[in-house]
Length: 294
Image (cartoon, rainbow, N blue to C red; front, side, top):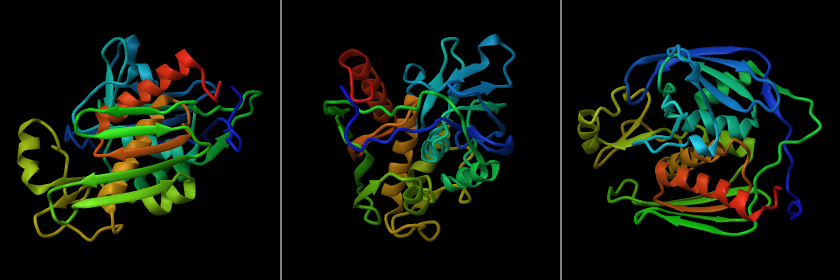
C-alpha cells in the first residue's frame, strides 16, 4: 500500500556533540550518569549499560525488548539486562526526530531530572542535531486498520492518519483533577509549549505505599507534582498538567517502536504496560498485514 496522502517522510538524525549529565533515578533513588554520543545512520537508539562488563550490555530500542515494569517504561535485552524509566527521554527524542543515538549509562534507570521532558529537551538542543545523509528516508509507521486495546481499566484506540494526534482522558476520584481531557497535535513546537513541562505526579496518600514497595525512592518536590486532597505541592505548569503528563508518557512509550508513528490515538486511563502492548501490536500488525509505511 502506498503512503497516505500528506504523510511526512523523516530524515535520519543524530546529535552533533557529545552530551553528559547526572541525576537521580526516580524509583531507585540512586545517582546515575548518562553520556550521549552520535550514532551511525541506521544504528538506531541503543542504551549501553557501562556498569555491566558483560558483552550483552547493549539494549536496543525496539518493540521486542519492551518489558512490563511498575510505574514506568522498561526495555530488556535477551540476556536480561534492562533499562527503566525511559519515557520522558524518549518523548524528546521522538519530538526532535533523533533516530540514531548511543546512550551510555552507569545504572539501570534514566535520571528523573525535574520530572518533566523539558529538562531533556534543553540538554539535547544544546548538544545540537545533525541530519544524516542516506538514500533511504526514515519511514514512519502507519497502519491501514484500527487497533483497540483494553486492560479492563484503561483503553487505547489507534486510527490511521497522516499525522500523529492524541486525545487523552483521565478520571480520578481526587476532586482537584477529576475528569480531564486534552487533545494534542504532535509537532516539535507543540510538544515544547503544550507538553514538555508537564511533570510526573502522584497522590500524597500513595507515596508511603510506593516507597515500601521499593518505588519512588528518588521522588521529591523538586522532581514531582504531589496531589493532596485540597491542593497541589506547587503551582501548575499547565491548567491540565496531569493529563498532559499522561500524553507526554504516551509519546515516549510510542517511540519504543524505534521509528516515528503516525495516526490518531484516543486514550483513556492508560498506563505504561498498555502503552507498550499497543506498540507491540502496532509492530506485529505491520509485519503480518502490511501497512501504509511499507
